[in-house]
Amino acid sequence: MQKSTSTPCWLGIRLPHLALDLLTRGQARNGLPIAVSESIKRRELIIDCNPAALSVGVKAGMPATAALGLVDTLQVVERDTGAEQRALQRLAAWCYQYSNQVSIPADRNGLFLEAGASERLFGRPQTLGNRLGRELGQLGYHAMTGSAATPEAAWLAAYEGLHIYSAGHIRQQIGPLPLGRLQLDAAQQLALERMGFRQVRDLLRLPRKALTRRFGPTVADYLDRVLGIQADPRTLYQPPETFASRMDLPAEITTSQALLFPLKRLVEELCGVLRGGDTAAQSLQIVLGHEDHEDTLLELGLQSPTQAQARLMTVLRERLERLRLPRPVREIRLEAPQLLQFSAGQHSLFMDTTTEHKQGIEQLVERLQARLGRESVTGITGVEDHRPEYSWRPRTLDEQADCTALAHRPSWLLPKPKRCTIEDYEILAGPERIESGWWDGRDCRRDYFIVRDTHGSTLWAFHEYKPRRGWYLHGIFA
Image (cartoon, rainbow, N blue to C red; front, side, top):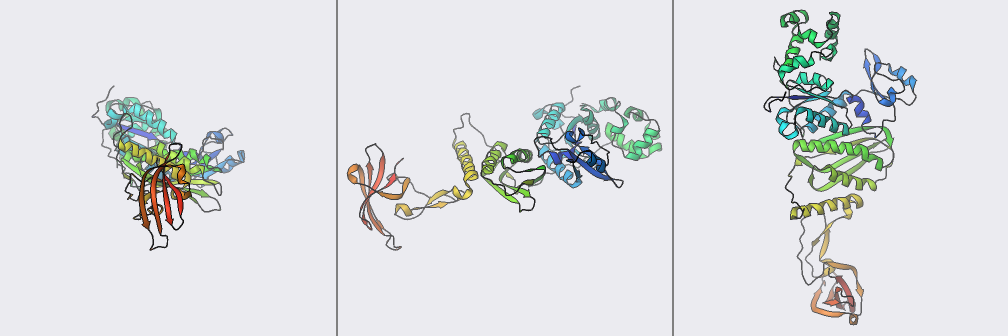
């Protein structure tokens, strides 16, 4: 049944392997057996593991000591709920590119986002849910999506991949689900199972008064929120004005080029956050963590703010090509210290406007700075001095240039004037007398001429009277 675009529709996103994803998303292949453990009733138990660990017999619920006894290379990492919450906050900001109503539930690993208002842009909730699942997979997260008219029903639908287009169909669609799918605490689940309830429909058949009398108002209120009988307001997430992400690597990375895979995932995550907040980044800080050695800091500076992943990755690749790692890398941290207002602008069909030419030059400069170093790529600005070799100085690229173009002077000077014989050239124009520099000990007296050589090239030559008499070539006209 097609839903109305004005009807609220919530998309539920389950992240069932979030703790494990945070450990494994930095590697391209799941070659190493990895498991996540948690202390439950004073016992260290395995709560999740990757396919490599499953293949050797490790499974959820197994004591960590028993799992370690199965394979020597198994990495058992204790669950970090703080890291999971930080990841959910980053993903909530990332989801802002699809909806401005995103909520993080406090008691589970997942997200809610309102998808009804976004249907005109991204299609029906099923289409958007499939897209989110793919893109979250590219970031290294396993995601399950489903939709319904209420957040709690959307959460139940996500487990089965259901998309329920109206509140009137919720009861029918979730009825066949096992009772364990409901978001109830363990004591309530156990009590219901002992009373013979097996499916959600068994519970929905009970009158509300009977349900309240047996289990108190908690279960009845929860079911009312699922069915849309009772309002279920959600606290909406507000994206921050900075971005920071960290990735622990399951295995050491020893070459700079191998860092591209985990960094690509971090940059993809950043760019999603930038699009969601309609912001852009102009500088990035990447910290590579080593064991028994101080961290390596990479600073990437752009000529203008951007939210384009391809542009950031191009600069990053150039920077990594000249990076030599002092020690293997165990963790990566990426930060955008300031998110700036983004101005998308308009592009012409043939990319021939002044703004687009400027953008092309900016991106070329960024690549050169990443490859050669920021100090090796500079601009020039004018200096008030008649002597050509002293009439300019280097400037940083963000400094305003102050140059006056003179048509009778070339823009390309030789590193040092080169002695020549004037008879080998044809004089086209001149002379221009320059006599200056007596106050700084570098005084000179010259007559400059525009000349042409036998190959047809136009050059700039001068006859010097002081301090070294003779003819010299000094510049080349383009």
